[in-house]
Length: 352
Length: 154
Ligand code: HEM
Image (cartoon, rainbow over all chains, first blue to last red):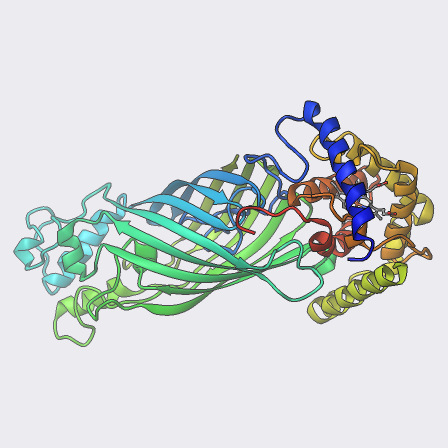
């Protein structure tokens, strides 16, 4: 406040001079205003893209806003991920826009391929539904068994899902909040639309559209473990998505929203390579038939309903802001009766 | 004024170290004066700042901010500031960061480009990553004092 008027005069003169000097040099930037489509954040701060399309790790959204835009800039990303499990494959791709390091809008499309596992599941369904006396494979439809489901999965069956996400940063900054405990905190809401056939949804007793919600707190210590930049993220999810929505939403007992944790850690070995791990609890809803119900369908329901927490260990490489590559070993546990679904996750995000 | 800055630097150092001790106490990170050695002492820091200011002068994202700067005075101030921050026997005697950058309309992007210029300079001088991160963790929290240009959503 003191000396405000001489200060102001000097500043005005200074700014005028700077603007005069700068304007012919740099049409795109001006004092006080960064280039709208510039990438003014630091390398790595856009993180990578989770399978649900949000900026974060591989399986969890984090509190960061996608891309490299600052509070004056707009950034965007596109991603492609492939997950190679023991009995399934998953593809995911999508894009996002980060507005003023405050709002993130994202879209992702996931395709979960059953491959040959479809036939295995068919056999299992038949076996259970007929009490261990399955007819010759291919001679019966599920309708004949009293199921309203599809005429079996066969081979190359795909479960597809679209996810539209909105994330808003509430407060905090992963880089600048170094001298106190405050993390960067964001809330997110995802709208899921599963393309599962109606009769399959009816058999499973799930809905095909649902919202899920999360609160994410991400903390970065620039000078963390061993002096290396260290990241920790904790999320609270509110969701009824079975296997993240690939098996629909809710179950026999209704909407089935659960409040569940997720977490991630990472250590930057240098400015380009980060090593870490993630955990994401999954809701478990009873599908197909009540667990206590009599008969084979309850047995089948119990088996299909089984979920496990998702986990991964990852390494991500940021050669420059426009590109990140992530490789991970994921363990998604039991998915649709197939146990220990682990394997390789590969992902590419491009930012611009 | 200088006492204000040194107090705030000391405060951030103390908080930084105690948070570090709380969070990573078992991991045995080096202490500040080790880092002063890793920066190559006063001579190393002087060489680093020369490279850094050169990087800034060649950085089209931000060099226009320095069009009318007194470069020798700025280098002198920065050497003392960095030296003091990393535990060296120096004293920064200039204005605090709010006063030093008042009215300059510095953007977050400019702050980050300048940080990247510092990272590049530290890489060029082969400063170990722990020492680099220690300095960056003391500079990063100055952002709210230095950046005054706001965006449409804050
Ligand atoms: C943590 C980051 C920064 C630190 C530690 C820092 C430090 C300093 C110091 C010590 C001075 C000298 C003050 C004096 O003796 O009067 C100064 C001046 C200045 N700084 Fe910064 N600064 C930082 C970021 C920035 C940024 C991002 C910009 C613009 C892109 C900037 C532009 C300037 C300018 C134009 C001057 C005035 C030079 C002159 O008038 O001679 N600074 N800064």
